[in-house]
Image (cartoon, rainbow, N blue to C red; front, side):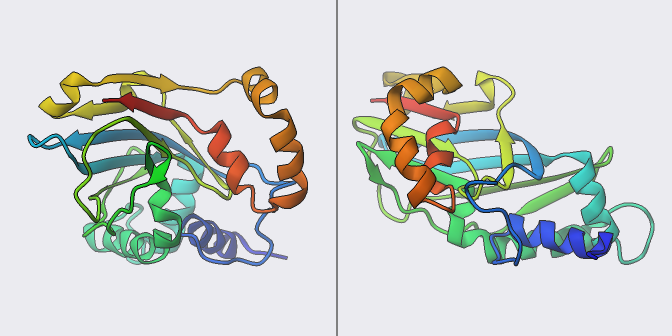
Length: 221
């Protein structure tokens, strides 16, 4: 039987994108970790995308499990060194999922550099991690830019409480239109019925399905 401490480690490793035996497959996947998320896309004065900022506040159950495993001095909080250990684990391992951050311009994926560092806090019983990424190459804001933040394994649910939780900043975005899209179940079924049937049999990781149902920010420049 898996102990609570082992479950803590499994949860953090799955969050960090590590291969863990017994992780849910696409057909049976459902979230085990819940995150209140905020996202910001930043434009430079030259009309290009210069930075993406993510802020994740984890649910109290998961946060308490991380506290149990990382509170080495047992003072019932996460001190800066302990927060750094959590952030280091996530930074080193979540790269294979691009830190759950996905950007396309006119349908083409934008390559993002690894965050220099993840910052964290532990307040009021909740763990929060924040970080930023930059495009690998100069990325002009032209056409349809789609921003998504989601876990392709469906293990972690990232929720944007309202439309202000996905925002843009920088004068260059002033010439663009923006819209936060929250696909509803009826909309998804109506527009993707044939695709979803194929995915059920051919996509055991849930990757494509998770992208379809993810809240996204559409920006047209």
